[in-house]
Length: 528
Image (cartoon, rainbow, N blue to C red; front, side):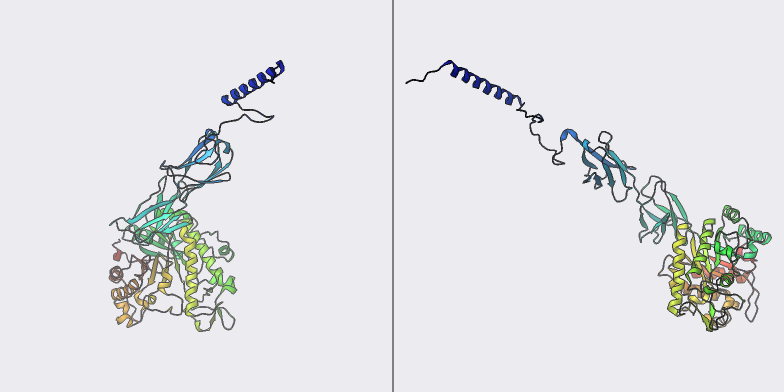
């Protein structure tokens, strides 16, 4: 029997056909079928190749540039929220607008770090300020590279290598570099927006004379010496800041000095005096007598050199000494040196950096056992600490030694060994006064009668010994006072000039004249 097709069957078939046509139309239009709460269907797009799953429509590109050179910075580390990225060779890094408000840190060696919030809708260029400065330091006369130059920015420093090159970081904005090398004038350089700073240092040979504690405070004597400096080859003055009697020349802010009555205040306005000397282009050296300190030893007997019988050690000048092993003594003298540097002295010179020699030194007691090794270590410790504290203040550092230290290989029982001391100093100033050498010294029958001979031989020994330490210069103390030896020879222009010429010939880089009352032989210096 053939099937019968009634009206109900035809209507059902028509409905099914209509539904099928509608479905095909919707699918072809890309609308899709929506469920309750579902988002409209989107055709899948290719992901951003830089960041998986990143919507290209929301992607942005950050760029990092050098703030001075305006060049892109490759290899900068970028922390964007929880993502860690690195800039490419165009300085670019990927991000997205959805990162708006995320913490952004950009860092690269040689640049200041940048810490900010990411602005998804703002500029995406970021600039890093270079903080590494490099350069080369040469001699101004011959252009030869200078090794061992101390290059400072605040308390940060480095030294030039054998090619005279240096690099220093981090260096702040609008920085000033300071360069120090013995034998050359101190140089201060404004860096500005430069990252390469080459410097030419000018040679400086110091020719100075000593201005004693009381002469510094007595206007007529002080003016007399300054007039001689103005009218001769002299260009420097050594001023007693803390002299042989342990008094401080000017009002001091070092509380311990005030407490023990060391502030003599012979010069009320040290800043004014130094300003006048600077105006006259006079190089200033602050002399500080270190371990011979009667005032401190009396006020702090536990810091003093003691006798085996329990009493204080007193030398032939009737003065007490402080114990060179005591750190407290180091700190006191360095505090005075720092103050002198801040006032504007060009150099700090330490005298009596040694153990005592005059008096009953065979029966003294120190806070440590007095061996060659311990004595040298004490002086090295003091000088190392002084250098660390004074160098950032821009002053040169020197120390006085006995003339015999140039010849002797041991510490002579006083701790002075020139190679050990030299590594912390710019200048070593041996006191090679002819009258301090006994008959026959260095094959000179009576040294005060042959001032040029004894000076040339002794200085020559020292210069040769210190050649392996290129940053130290020997700058000798010379005698401008009458011989106090057996023959009591008078010292006049020929004797003084003979020493100057001999010291120069032997390699002394400049020289200093000593006279305890600061009266000098102008005829030996081309003065009036």
